[in-house]
Amino acid sequence: MSDKLAEIITEALAFRNERDWERFHDPKNLAEAITIETAELLENFLWATTDESRHMEGAKLGRVKNEVSDILIYIIYLCQALDIDLVKEARKKLQINRQKYPVEKSKGSSKKYTEF
Amino acid sequence: MSDKLAEIITEALAFRNERDWERFHDPKNLAEAITIETAELLENFLWATTDESRHMEGAKLGRVKNEVSDILIYIIYLCQALDIDLVKEARKKLQINRQKYPVEKSKGSSKKYTEF
Amino acid sequence: MSDKLAEIITEALAFRNERDWERFHDPKNLAEAITIETAELLENFLWATTDESRHMEGAKLGRVKNEVSDILIYIIYLCQALDIDLVKEARKKLQINRQKYPVEKSKGSSKKYTEF
Amino acid sequence: MSDKLAEIITEALAFRNERDWERFHDPKNLAEAITIETAELLENFLWATTDESRHMEGAKLGRVKNEVSDILIYIIYLCQALDIDLVKEARKKLQINRQKYPVEKSKGSSKKYTEF
Image (tube, rainbow over all chains, first blue to last red; front, side, top):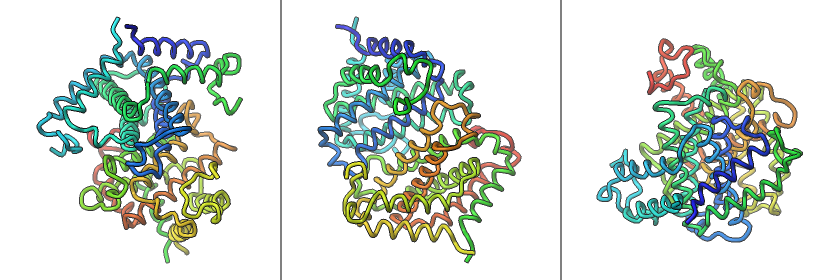
């Protein structure tokens, strides 16, 4: 089994190197870029109810696919800029979340851990 | 070589199932959650210059690691909710970007493709 | 009748001058600050349905009041930094919107003008 | 002297009533709309340094003017939906900020009050 995230990281960095764009990719600007792509993602759900948002197809679903991809690609660039191992950190964060949200306190509840 | 993204997806979905949180995770709310985590990421770069943002360490770097992880985890939930194959879509988007930003037009330039 | 927005602008700029903060308030950082406050506003509606969001009270309503205020204050700073007359521009934008969204095409519809 | 913000509020609500849009304007969706407009504002500063962002003109300045107007208009709708007196709340928030950020602790410093 191949490591697909590693392949995308390689591909995304090659794309950038060919265009000599690393010079623009300081962490502050990358964080802004992630913010902008995220708002473009959110726009696809604007004026819908939460229930309506469960049923998405056609051009709108296509735009959602593009936006989540853009967010992932910019996160890859940010992690490269700050020497962050995304896979390792996501694992560690899931471990933190398991401690912040013990099953017995959080099951079936949308409360933030600060509200327990 | 193992597929690390697939492992995180498995782990993130297990975390959620144990807490019975899927009921809250409609795409509209997940897109909002991604937006909120992204702003928390951006907050770490607020009032810094772009150059200063390149040098990040200690507690601030720790927070950045947590935020990029949270964004990735919520993207995984959104992709699961809408049956999106994140790896496949990111690949497709990189292919789209290669066509929108041909090397000869975009090399060393931060212009948007709409400004070529 | 006094001009209340003008009074808030005066008060907000006095607050800033006393703290010598204008030096941090370049437009890029102010736009980031508005983004961060906006996400803090949105967080109050996270995991709610659109209907539930209509009924808000107590501490949550208090936080919403604080966040809309923060957004307005940062917009005032941004307008000052770029010499923008907010009242005049909002009027002009409403005029643009009246043309983009003629009553006969937009009545009772949440479609974006690009979808007419 | 006329109260210009009150005039814009009147005009913005009239614009909406003519289009029968209040039905879409629950607080959750309005908070999303503010988020989206804010990201469109931020996009005008993307890839710029903080210094470069101080000098803005032409079409880009025009877009910034439109975006701050859109944000203000949506904030007006949100305040109307939740019966918030924006002017009164902004005044109260400035008073809170004066207490959180005493001049002697905050003068010339971009530290958050939680870091004092």
